[in-house]
Every structure is written in C-alpha cells, then in structure tokens.
Length: 430
Image 1 (cartoon, rainbow, N blue to C red):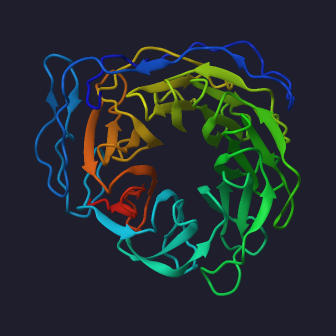
Image 2: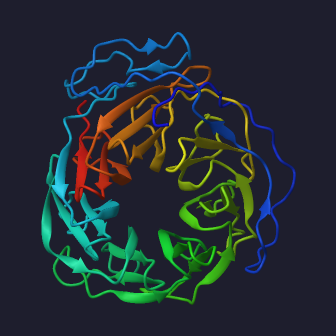
C-alpha cells in the first residue's frame, strides 16, 4: 500500500467554466461540481533516491511503468544555486516537546534570523526554537503554556506593533488562542481566547476585506464549517461568521483563485472526500462553498500553479489512502481535471507546493508519517515525467514548512515529527 508507481497524466490544458460564483450566504449548503485527477497507485516498486551533497547519477526510468526516479545530474556543494538542483545536508533534529503537530517560521525575536514556532499537542504548549544561523536552532525556555488541545499555528502581525504574534486553533476548548508579542523580543503575553466553531483544527491568516489588517480563518472539524474572524481594530476581532463546507474540514488554505485581487478559501473535507472552494467578493463575506470530489479522506491541501498555465491549482492528499489529487484551476475560481503524469504517491499527511529545485516549475512536497520520510515529487515541466526523491526525517512527521532558514537563498525544509518529539531540518546544500 505504501509504495507504488503511477501512470496518470496531469494535462496542461484547461477548459474555462462559464458559471459565475454563487452569492455568499452563511447558511447555504455546499454544492458539488467538477472532478479531479486521481494520482493512484498501479504496479511496481519505485526506486528511492536520497541525494545529499553530491548526486552524480542520471535519472532512471522504470521500463514497466515509465516512472522516472532520481534527481537530474547536477553538482552540489559549490554554493551556487542552479536550476534542477536538489541537494540537502544530512538531517538535523531538534527537541520540540512531547508531540509536535504544527509549525511555522518567522523572526520571533527580531534578530534577523528565522525562528520556529511549534505546537506541542501532547505537552499542551507552544515551543519556540530560536534560529542561530546555518539552520541551527535552540529552545527558548520555557515553552508558552497553551490551552487544552492546541492543534494548528499561524504566525502573523495581528496588531500595530510590527512584531509577529501567534494564533493557535485549539480543538479541545472550541476556541482560538492568540498570543500577542509583549516584553523582550521573542516573548509573548498570556493568550487571549477568541470564539471558534466546534473542534477547530486548522488556522490561517490573511487580509480578507482589504482594510490592511490581517484576519483569521479556522476550519471547524466538529461543526463542518469555516469560521472567519475579521479584524476590527489593532489586535481585536469581530465575532466570526461561519460558512458551511463538507464534512470534517481538516485543512484549509488562502489564495486568489479567481484572479480578482481578493483572497479566496479552500478546505480539505476529510469526512466527505471533497475540497470546498469559497470565493471572496472582496469584503470577506464568502460565497457558498462549491465542493469538488477528491481523494478519500483528504487531510491536507496546497495551492500553486502546477501546470504552468497561469492559474492556481489545488493539490489534495490523504494519509489513510495512498492517493493524491490535483484540481486544475480555470482562472475564474472553478476547477476541472485532465490527465497527467505523476510517478509516485503514498499517504501524505501534509503537503506543500513550491519550486524546491529552482527550475521554474512547482514541485509537490509532502511527509509520509508511516515511513518517516519527506517525499518530493518533482515537476519537470510540460510533457515530461516528474522525478521523485525521498529523505529520512524524524519519527512520525505530520507537518512541514519550506523556507530559507539560513539566509543563503536556497529553500530548506523542516518537519514536525510527532512520534519522535522533534523538528527535523533538511538544509539545502547548493
């Protein structure tokens, strides 16, 4: 079930849809429309490749499946970032509580170096890891006390002091916990609670109504809706509006899906096997959700222009089933599916879409919780089979971020390893 090659093709062509978005209503049920490309296993084991600082072999092709594995040959270790290059130093792990489940990067102490904020679900705390350069981290003691069951974290400037604040979705108390920066750099006041729905599992921040202030959105697994808390002043928020989506929304993301300059919403609905899309007319009052069938029990999603047509696409993954689905954006907020090639899929607990190898095409990056690996599905462009690469990380990874953690211009990766109680960093080694 864990390893398999794939033989479906993600097309580069999209057919525009003509139906306009529905009018927003917080009481409307989501409609179901469209379809998606299934990236499902067929036959044959995939070859695993773990390049570090000196990969020199050419890609190889499985004669049965046509799947290409291994990084294109390129020199590593010369300090020069080159197109197609994907090289990491050996992984380094840092203690991050008893059960880290979510992480985010920002300069918490304003020293010019990226730091990490980590949700420790088991330890009921927020762990802060101070960046010391070269993608090294040390703990800021003590951890911030949290509420009952903290699950997801976002770091953003939520007031007017130009310092990063923390907002946490706590599914045990049905509330958001907001920590405002206070005192010495890297320190925070006790958290303040904001109203949420039932079992808020994921949280994101963005300016939804164009007023220059960041708003908060949370996915409520227990009440099957998204809560939108619009900022109404420095560090203050109006009562949330709730928008029905599919069953058990597990993850969410913000992006301008219809290219009108406003941030729209997507959620991965684990209980209904759908992705819900909510279009923003510009004032933060979203249109009713449109639901697209995707993989069984989707737990994670990411947004980016996978096929290079200028429109944002959505990638949804399942941990329970080794399936990946791609919804191809039409540019107007609607989605369609076309065939394509993706050579590898496992049950990915979290995913990101980013140009990790600097070749101009967005790759899919995910974590395999059971195999304790980072999975990189590399997009080599139109008409070409992607390659894939696997990298060992800590035990039980359930979240990841991709960011330049050492200031060298190359993208590094960090994972939250819930079983091992660590954050593992893969530092790029150009």
